[in-house]
Length: 86
Image (cartoon, rainbow, N blue to C red; front, side, top):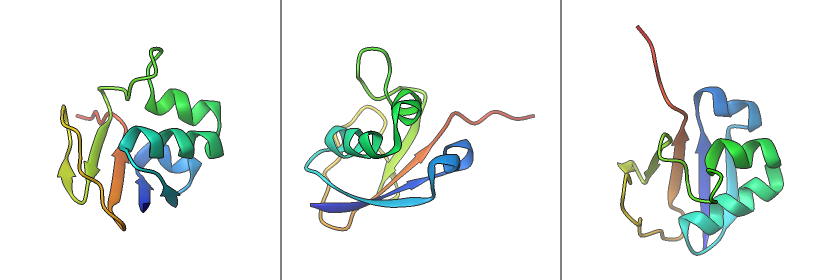
């Protein structure tokens, strides 16, 4: 299925929005990392190849922390880096 992946904040240096085909969140993000390179991969995945827990990821506007999202054709995945401020 084809979905949109949107990047925010400091991740925007890689681009704003991409269309990617895949069947799971992990597959889609790995395909995007193949396109964008090793630096992007390290921004999204930890040293064990798992999606980093300090990233905020939403699917169709819903935060997917600790759950497996159900993707469908046209889903929108948004990725935010850790946010800090004062």
